[in-house]
Image (cartoon, rainbow, N blue to C red; front, side, top):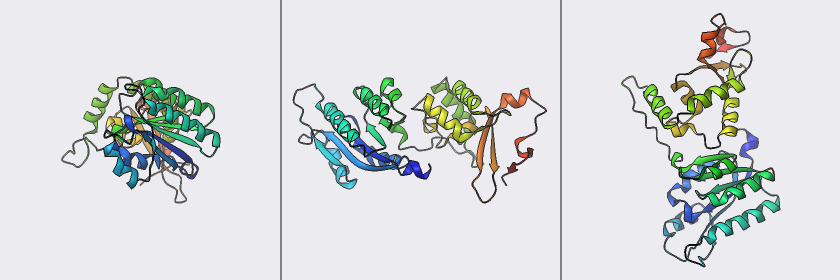
Amino acid sequence: MDASANAAKLAVLIDADNAQPGIVESLLAEIAKYGTAHAKRAYGDWTGTSLKGWKDQLLKQSIQPIQQFAYTTGKNATDAAMVIDAMDLLYTERFDGFCIVSSDSDFTRLAARIRESGLTVYGFGERKTPKPFVAACDKFIYTENLTYIPSVPQAASGMPRQTAQAAAGRLRDPGLEDLLRSVVEAASNDDGWAHLGGVGDIIRKRRPDFDPRSYGYPKLMGLMEAIGLFEVDKRDPGDGKPPVIYVRDQRYKDETPGLAPADTQVGVQPVQ
């Protein structure tokens, strides 16, 4: 993430009735990738016992509890309180984006309204979150991925069994292959190579909930390498700058056998 992204001022609104307290630490660590949480509020009926597990987290993470009584059985007054607060914060014009933590589709219109005002919306919820809410956010992170633990067994050589894991990922998401190939094509230049950062940007616009951790890989590059459909090239720009990563559909190389490898093209130095 660049400096401007990390400088973004974010408002974090948590539906405590619809989220687990155990995710708070990893949630805030994830949010820190996108900006600084200038407001952190959790909503619920704190007079009852159902939110008991949240109280330690509120103190530890300096989250402001917002009391909302359950006026009627079966009705969720917390949602309305969050929406009202969100609009109040929006009108202050002090924030660059909002983080809405809930798996409830009732926040779909709120996310869309905030985006209409030109602010970024990050959604956080469980995999059961309805698709309309996911699609209404600029980026949606499944909370199951916040406690990411690599599930790929280590082979004797110390390398992960990436082929098996990638195959399992494709079974869970049959559209993954088509998605990655179409995005790489959209981001590529005349020789078929696409900057990995540009690939990631287009994927997020097409599918806000895309996350390589859902397939067992912490980074997009690991998934691209493991899936076995793309060439991955790390190019050294020189002057002590970090390598720049490019990817290309292997079918492009097969269709143009006379094309010189990336590391022999003018101005591109292989990374040692």
